Image: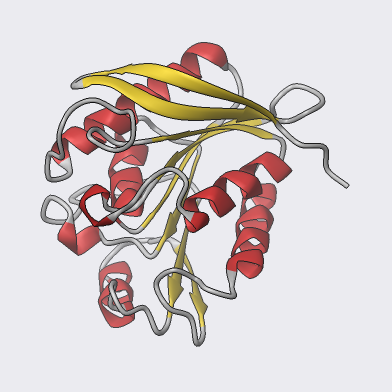
Length: 212
């Protein structure tokens, strides 16, 4: 059985004020990688405690990574106000720099869920991430989509019955990318992956282990 990770509540200097974060490290040994995890839409109740966001962090921890979840501006104890995705991308940048200051050598991965997945895609191109995991990416709803494509190993996980992020839209968007990400469709699965979180964690662990 895995030991509980070392967990630390942190405050990050962000562009709109301090950002509330949760920094977790493997209980034993040095981190083999680092991961920043972005949560779903702030206006619709998304926080770093979201179950899918938590599951992503647990998957990276199981692979030996140090992880950083954080609340976007205006969420929880994070200062500032919602900024339609542009400021939230800057927040992700601040979180990325924070964890990079503590772990300069291990590879950096970025991940996220829904709104956070769209932010993670943009952040991965900006910060030359070593890997990217996007769960139900609401890419067409955030800042007009993404013009650049990440070149790192990239996994997209999408529920076929997603009621908020249309699966056919996601497929059409991916089909327009070259070479594009690896796509994993979950049948009979809605947006919040109810009843599928263990399978989600296993899929992320398998992909990360294969590419790190």
